[in-house]
Amino acid sequence: MTELELLTSAFSAQRLNKYIAYNHGDADLAVRHYKSNLRLAESLYISLSVFEVTLRNALSRELCNMAGKADWFDLFYTTPELQPLVPEIDKAKTLIRNRGEQVTTDKIISEMTFGFWVMLLNSQYERVLWKPLRKAFPNMPKQDRKRKNVSAPCNSLRHLRNRIFHQEAICWDLYYVTCLHDNLITVLGWMNADIPDWLAAIDPFNDVCVSIRKEMGWN
Image (cartoon, rainbow, N blue to C red; front, side, top):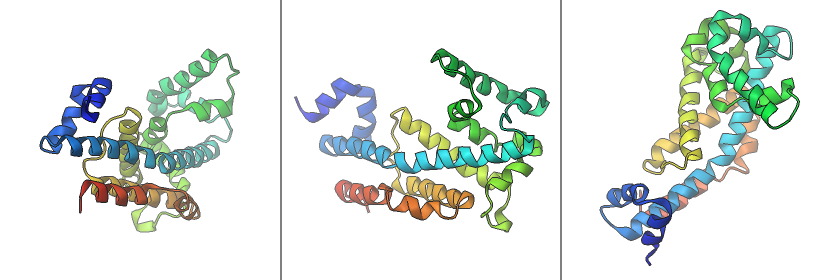
């Protein structure tokens, strides 16, 4: 059994055929490309994790200041513009209860998905939330200090994260993925000026990209 046959039997022909087509029927290149996709996804785990936790804590802090209390999410139940987000809060509470744990403020905040935090920056909540939430990005240049300049990269990163966590292909355009990673570092610096340098020491993304380009023969 060839390596391609092994991967096809384990992961389905539909999944592998995309790589075969992209590499013009070259089985060896297709297999290398599939492995490269896995390595690229793994290389983004650290930066995406750091970004998600930093964003969650920064936005939660400002929501707490806005509401004047730690359980700021209670405000969503009584604010008509924010009520579309209530199901996300209820879902977090249900997940905690289903684990047999006590529902606490800290657990609710930790249970909220990356998608929830990114949704807070969307245009439909701008009138209510952007004024307090922009304080979560104190290092953002004044000329760029608009909601869409935070929302757009955050939504792109959410999409990338979802593709990675659903084992979908991301290794078609390394330039595009590198741009997303650069955006991640930029927005991270808007929240905390020191975290990008700290992250750089443990972030394997750039080295993995160089390695993939060499192995795949990409310029």
